[in-house]
Length: 119
Image (cartoon, rainbow, N blue to C red; front, side):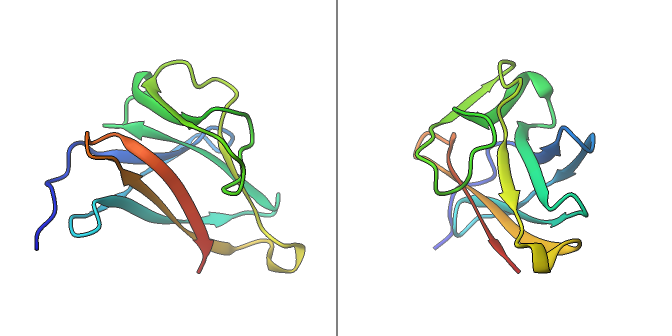
């Protein structure tokens, strides 16, 4: 079985570090994924940019949302200011802890969930 073609390009964007990384597309799972590193701060905050465009930002409904928080995925739009997902690494794993980050899509092709786990 082959899943849907990639509907757009998705970029992981870290506002505090001012960098982006294009995520890979998994056609079979219909999701985007990448890995990212927690630095000496002990955390990583991020948003997602459709086609790398800040006017098409995907973000959680609250600031510093953890994966376990009951937050909704919002966007894509330009109203993400101050709202990001936040990965916090245990103190013994900082700096340099790598995380696998994935964004799954709904039937309409929009981001429905964002998840992560340590590598």
